[in-house]
Each structure stands twice: as C-alpha cells, then as structure tokens.
Image (cartoon, rainbow, N blue to C red):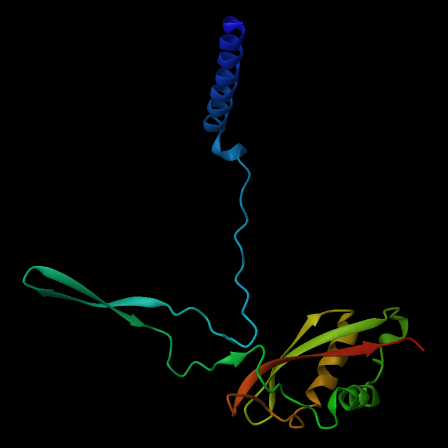
Length: 183
C-alpha cells in the first residue's frame, strides 16, 4: 500500500516536472503574442496627443549631471473633446438636421450605375464659434456618394451652436450620418 502511494506521488511529481520543463523550453517564436490594448479616449475627456520630451541641456555642478527635459509640444495645442456636457446643437435638433441634409442631397450626375444604398458617416470638428472644419469620411459607401456626403455636410457650416464644457465653448468632434436610398 505504501509502495503504491509512493509510486502515485512520484508519477504526479514527474508529470508536473515534465509540464514545467515543456513550459520553459517552448521557443519564443512558438509562444502566442499578446495584443497590446489600444487606449481609447474616455468620454468627457479631451483627446490630447502625448507630449514628446527632448533633452534641452546638461548642467554639470559638483560633478553631478542634471538633465533638463522640455515639453516640445506647443502650449497652444488645441484641445478637441469627444464628448462634452453640452454637445453642439443644430437649430431644430437632430430631425431638422437630417431634413436639411436630405433636402440638399443630390444624387451624383455620374451615379446612374451606382447600386449602393446605405449611410456615409462624416466626422468634423465644431469649433468654439460654431464653425465646422476638418471634414473626413469615417464609413465609406461609394467614392461618388462619399464626395456628395462631404459636400452636404459642409453646408452645415455656421449653423451649429458650439459645444460647452464647464460653461465655456470648446472644440468638439461631431459625426453625422448621410443616408442614401435608391428610389
């Protein structure tokens, strides 16, 4: 009985030892890679690029070297928010904005052969004064329809009430969906 228990214990220990040996002997190339998590901006927090630091000078005082680092990003770098307490608003609300977009939307002249239907998402920045800038297409549908969506979104310029954070107007990213339907 004691011999059986001892033999069973030895088998368990040798199995663990073998597993440990296999773990440490796995080549690095065969080990699975871990994905790095992308940092996403938090709601209500501004989207700011990480500052780059550069060495400015080395001061030698009593055989001690002091490295002075300086932030090379400009202090006038604009802060652009993803979400604010009071988001930018189109007069009349979301329904009025969609009606404005549909009223001004034109099917492209060379688009007779386009069999695409759906939405094009256009992103832009609503400035502190309500002016729009930096337009870009986030979700494409067709190059001609994307161009038309950009054109119609640019017609919204100057019509927005700017977004506000802590009672002051701020720059905010804003996205609109321009819908295309075949009639």
